[in-house]
Length: 420
Image (cartoon, rainbow, N blue to C red; front, side):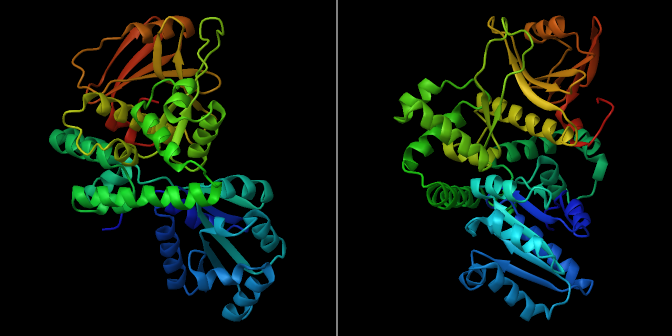
């Protein structure tokens, strides 16, 4: 069974639009596999498709100019409408301007392009293609896609209910995902040794191809050390001076490297939420990794059985991803909250008209207990509801005008629920 990717339906729908379909995401997240599947589906319908991969020298030769590429396509299609797939488009110099020129010629071709998360792709293409493309982001395999794959897609929207009836299976699969993450080849690898070998290959490719070649990274070893430090401080406040001292990099370089790690889909920065600047003066971001497996690889962790602290931060990272997916089609933004008095809430979903505080507990809670920090936030902001996401407890209680909902993590697998 192939790993089901939820983005497929959106890509299929956009094939009928004139805009360039631009698929971006981390290296080895499965972008090429999706393109190949789209090609197969179109060919089954009798559509003509041309697949070009810029990692292949013979294909790359045709991208020396727009004219040369169009001449190649003309020969292949005889001028008939066609779907043109371009894989690893960031390899083109000035890729945004190149695609803009192709689009503006009003050819009978539908352009679909992919590229690894890179500054070239995310920045220059974005500037050049305003109004001419739509971005689709493909992360590594999500926890929901992972569980659908592991259960052979038998349960659909009933997946949370199924997991509730199989607690031992739920725990085993959760720990596997938090240990090895969601890179497709890692998910399908049968042994821990193979999973770790693939993670090593992916990380080496990222350093050599995205960071050293694309960004002309001068101190790759220092960059790796920086990522290891961030991995070990997942979900904690960043101290730039401390990181500078540990890596022998300037503070400015540390900030630049961390910015680069975000733009290449390795890390994710969470900024603080505040309205009261006198009390909530904390400004440093917190960093999480996009993929748990890569984070653990950097720390040499391949077993969470005796790693409760790491498990807790990885579970917190997973809840962040589930919150991002749940609120992806809204204007909501996600932050953390911390005061000078050390009161802290893991996540605050700012929905504009209201806020939703979310505390994460990587344990099987036995009772509906609300800790001091969350109470402090509720007192200050009076949100209509607050969530305590945990491993198994489902319950609710009222504090003033705020309803506190204790939510098992599995309930966040559905797109919407009674908890929204």
